[in-house]
Image 1 (cartoon, rainbow, N blue to C red):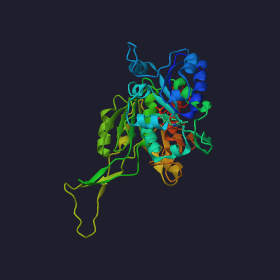
Image 2: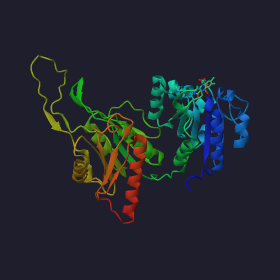
Image 3: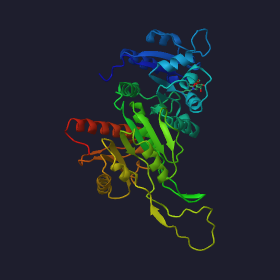
Length: 408
Ligand SMILES: Cc1cc2nc3c(=O)[nH]c(=O)nc-3n(C[C@H](O)[C@H](O)[C@H](O)COP(=O)(O)O)c2cc1C
């Protein structure tokens, strides 16, 4: 049963928001679903609600202090034991502290001390929610793999109508059930994901590149890691932090990306090429900075190595998934690429659509498999898009195993 949390240990962090009382309802639902829940409260949270309420409902001690007389080192033992850290409500303060590695109380210390996935449900005043500092801190956390359940619009404690209300209990519980109810359906797989742009040198200070941010590939790497795979992320230059538990190899050029992929090919069982690899590179990169002399300048380009074409010959039983970012005639272009590269599936992406493509946090993609079956996904966060791509790969794999819809 999906909503069964028996055997799961959740750490519920409660912080100093007016919405702190709602965490009592969340706690009750988690306990009803069979989870063992340990509540950790910040000192501000105790201004709003008492530990006793949580203690009675969780039937467990509630922890409020880093320094107590216990013999165990509480922040370490708790961090190691739990399957998930859920902070609901999460104040602007806790978001800022965790985004910057500040560990000055029990809750902020234990989140830095263990591998458990973290989910945060912020709640605050509308002005606070829209503040650029808060938004920057959220994007740092998002990049680190923390799942943020955005607040909702509605009447706030201040009396104003704005975005800032804690997400509904149902939404928060759905995320917990989804994350903890999920099977480790990629356990045993080694997933190699390429991400980001490449940079092809013109001279020591200039290069050719493209607008890829790497966000889609990083979301796939993170999602595959959550599902139990060993994940190797071969990344072009990006500003994104490496998701926890993922092995990252940083590269710059298409040639370096090819070498890194080939170097890990023997271990790979599933390849997802989400990188926007340059198709062309300068044929003769200059050894010194090219000087401006007033005359026209011509750059001679040559094709970069076609990584997929090389791998195709030695694919064995591996699954190959590619991406097509196009600006016109998406369906035809994507199908042509699928065939030409011998892919099992292509993720087609019209980068001119609003809400899709480079450097955004959302995407709109269509998944086309080798039999021509298509699944058009709506506009989703890149994290959710990544989950749906992996769901589809797993579905195709199991259909192939059953002999119904063979992969290549
Ligand atoms: C009545 C009241 C309500 C508050 N509600 C919120 C809130 O909803 N969200 C928030 O980010 N801060 C809120 N604050 C401010 C936090 O309590 C304050 O930033 C505190 O330092 C948070 O500490 P903590 O993150 O360690 O729990 C509120 C403060 C007061 C006095």
